[in-house]
Every structure is written in structure tokens, then in C-alpha cells.
Image 1: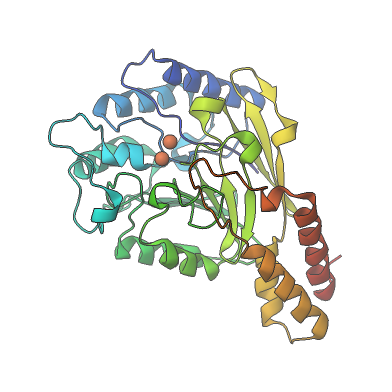
Image 2: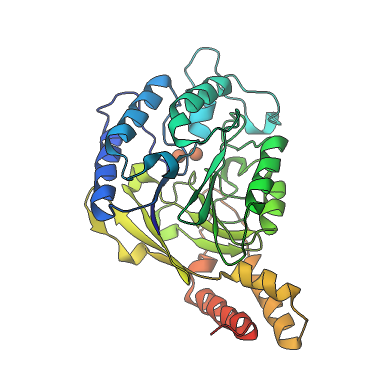
Amino acid sequence: MKFHLIADTHCKTAPDHEDNQNLALALQDMKAICPKASAFAIAGDAMQDGYGREFANLYSMLDQHNPLDQPDVGTFICLGNHEVRGGYYVPGNQWIPNTEQEGSLPTPYYKTAYNLYMEYNRKYMSDTQGKICFDHWIDGYHFIAMNPDNGLKDMAYFSPGQLEWLEEKLAEDASDDKPIFVISHWPLRDTYYNSNMMEGFGHQDAKVKEIFAKYPQVVYFTGHLHTRFARLEIQSRPFGTMVNTPCFQSSLSGYVVQVEENRISLKARNYIEKTWLPEHDFEIQWPSLPVLVAKAKKAPPCEKLIGAIAEAEEIMTMHYENNWVKDAPRPELFYNLPDTKQRIERLRKVFLDYQGVK
Ligand SMILES: [Fe+2]
Ligand SMILES: [Fe+2]
């Protein structure tokens, strides 16, 4: 099974704006390189300000160039902070600073963005009964799109009702051998080097981690950080596998994700130059480290397993001390170090051998 994944396209109100034209070209390239893809996702900030004209442009572009044969069940256009906070210069729409807003009361633009999304995105959602989040099962894999319930300046806000829905959905026919793909705009805090930038995820960070931790087979795709290719990481965490998606607007790139029983491959592609970027590919070996650790913890304890669990937990809880301190020297990326990759592979082998899987 293959799907297309991009983020942060930041489409504008003028249909002929370069960012819009690039996306139209990219959609055509996606169709050409992988005509049988089963899904297509934009991990938020698909639009610059969430204006009606932007929705009209983006969705008419999708009507014309959606790369899928069956767009209605495979298209996941997620909302980011840009759409739900609205443009700064709209009268009466001063952004609410993250720190001053708990999120329970709708911010000025949120209702407009919500209404536009529910109207335009209806064709890609099942009946959600007013919920802004939705899910589909595609080729036997569960895809869940998490959209925010309020329009803060930078952070996410997910209501208690939506988090309850998320937990129910994760439980739906869950099998620990299969990844569950969750797509949202916001990375969780203390993951990537700059994941705490501008307050990071928001007040529900701990709660979402707690929910995901019950399903370590979650693969969580996010955008928002506009991280340069060379600084992108895929991380193993106790709450799943985290994937930081490149910013389409600046890199003109994204991933073709190929899902196989033993691995998930992310093939980097520049859609405008029509080139593959193998130096920026990633592979997630499956079962992933978080899945194997969760299983090992349920097994009868033995010395070898206890040591491997402790080492894996050390890797899965590594975090950057100076998380995005402006102008501070940037640290080496833990997860991209050959040493970390080797340790993860060695530990996976210990767990797999123990389970009798060759
Ligand atoms: Fe963005
Ligand atoms: Fe963003």
C-alpha cells in the first residue's frame, strides 16, 4: 500500500500564486509517479489564512488533480494553525496569544474556518456528526485525521470530546502488528529539536501522549515546524513513531510512503524538479521499537529482556536540552546518528528473537 504525504503547502487566495501552481504541478507529478496510491495527506497549513477564497482554490485544484483513483475515502486535508486562526488583518480577528488562551472558548476566526472546512471537506469525510476530525480504513489500515477544535495562534487545541473520540478510534479493530496512521499538524512536545517552538503542541500534549502510549503502533505524521530536509527526524517514542514531514512550500517536496509488513519506507520526492531524493529517504522497520518494547513488557521478565527494555526506554526518552533556543548552537540529531540507528536495530533483534520471530 502506498500513499502520498506532504505538509505546509500554504495555498493563497490568488489562484495563480506560485505556491498554488506548485501544488497543482505536484499533484500531477504524484499521479504520474504513483498512479495507484491509496491515500493522499496534507498535514496541515494547507492554506495560508483559511480564507474562503483559499478553500475554493485548494478544493477546486483537488477536484481537478487529486492523485487518487478514489479520492473520497483516501484524501486527508488537515487543518493547521494558519487556517484556524485566520488572517491577522481581518477586522476583529486579532490572534489570541497561546499563553492567554486555554482553548475552551472559540477564538474569533475559528467558527468561520470550521464552517468552511465542514463544507469543502465534506466530500472526503464520512458523516462526522459535526466533528471536525474523521477517519477511514484504507487497504486494511486505519487512518485518523486530527483537526483542532479552536484557533489559537500557534498551538493546537483538542476538546475532551475529540480526545475521547480519538481513544475510541484507536481501539477500533486495533491489532498491535499493524500501524495506525494518525495525521495532524502539530508535533508533540520534547520530540524534535524545535518541537517546543512557539509553545509547541498545546495544553493537551500530555493527554495525547497518554492516549497514544496505549497504542504504540501509532505512526504520527505532522508538519508545522518547516524543518529543513537535513534536520528531519523520525523518532521512536513510548507513544509511537513520530514522523516530521518537510514543508512543501519551501522544499517543493514530500514523501511517497510505502507500507509493507516488515517496513514503512518514506521516499523523498521533489515534485517540481521531478527528482527522487534518496539521501533524504527514511525507513521504519516493523514491528517498530515502541511496539516491541510494549510487547516485551508484557512478557515474563528475564534478565536479557529487562536490560533491553531499559536501553530502549533510554533511547525513546532522549530529548534536546535546549529545545529551540534562538541562535543557540544546534545539537547533533539523536535519531539520525548511525550509533542510535544501530542500537535500535540491535534491540529490535533482541525482542524479535525472544518472541521467536526470525
Ligand atoms: Fe506552516
Ligand atoms: Fe503551522
